[in-house]
Length: 170
Ligand code: ZN
Image 1 (cartoon, rainbow, N blue to C red):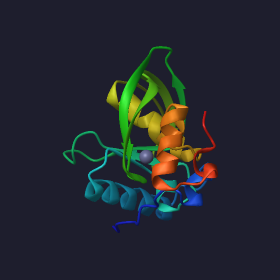
Image 2 (image 1 turned 90 degrees about the horizontal axis):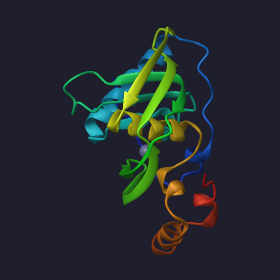
Image 3 (image 1 turned 30 degrees about the vertical axis):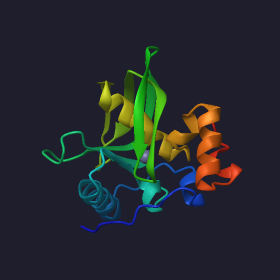
């Protein structure tokens, strides 16, 4: 296992869309192991492959504080529920920034595991919020894109980020 360097905003690679995984081989298993180890060492709760410069649709989530192995989602597709909440988020790729983001409280997710076996799951609360944050990474979106406009402008001014860095607001 290796600890991968985590890219930091405004690295343009964080803005690229990840590609679906078609080959479930040893190389993919190694990526999952490395992401898991990197997540454990970083103390975060979720990590997506594009945050390490790998463009595959792979993410890991661990809300157990390292007590159990991370959940692995490959090629995830999410269907958010209609009830939303305001959640305080931060991101390993945007160090030092915390902000409130609107997220669905629950999601239904279909994905594949490391062997390519499809599964479906219903998530609620923090796991659901965390998954939405990580799936955003697979699409080149950062949580700061979802902050209110005024907050985004303030961050840009304070941190000297260019306009393109946060232009992909959704
Ligand atoms: Zn993040």
